[in-house]
Length: 430
Image (cartoon, rainbow, N blue to C red; front, side):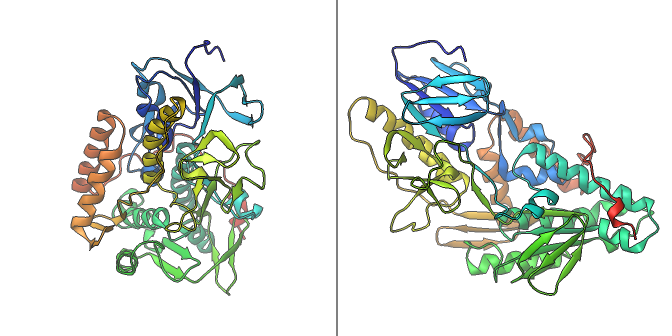
């Protein structure tokens, strides 16, 4: 990897997400050598991936170069690498570009889509956890409407314009709302020779409420907002399969669809060598103590979505969202220095800053502490918070300008098929 030897302890961070970047920033100007490894050369602001999928934003507005984050940092190195395995006993990391030893290792690999072992759904449904996946989904959405123009078979046309989103969490709710707004304000203008009124957006939730983890009030209001937009919400329905054409469920419900988005769950993106039964808990997450140390390995730490820290207040671990990763990364920066200098480390205490989700134009729900509010004010709060946490002044300005333009013009300029998504449409023909 061509990392120079140093008299400073070497800290290797795997993953340039919220946790990894927070930790890297905290270690600036400290007497340590930091090596950041990631399979991409950019950080992705995942909360806005759904806007890339629906043409509201271009991908470069929610991505930020990792090397730019580290500009001016002494003893910092970035390598574009996919980590294949970790040997915790020899303290060696094996990657596609070579091996690297470490003094301290921090795993911040985040999460990936959890298909719960259903290989058929994994093969045929669309995931939305990365920019390439979001671009694939954007292309598929647009290609389906282009294909609907070419057929005179009503059954095939309806299937091409029927969108099924599985999972009623923030991702599913926000994507459903965005698609409903596209149907209402954009499709009639783009496809005047197509009866876009027949387009359907179905949101399927296995539980009895949307936005599990939010307040009952927020859950109910989000459902009301979606139904106002024309989204069909199906609760208490568990999807069992999708063969690329037909969605099957445990009930008698069947959906014919050419576009199914799986937003029903995530799991830790673990690494070989740290995936033993003793270390892994539910959700493929690594079990850590109150200092984010991996159990039985005091020189290995895990933060963010991949880490599961049990406590009386969090019997299932912290939520797999950005804030725990950011807070853990910041504290771990101090604790690593404390550990190196033989000072006691400080246990992690999560400060819940609330939950929020947007459903569409002037429609959002926010739970912040004791406060519960919905509608226009919640929508403005949601926008402000997301702009604040975006990395880079340019990205904030680009996103803000896009949002203002989209609001005023009721338009989404980025509805482009830049990289076509390969889809076999022959199965929809009778």
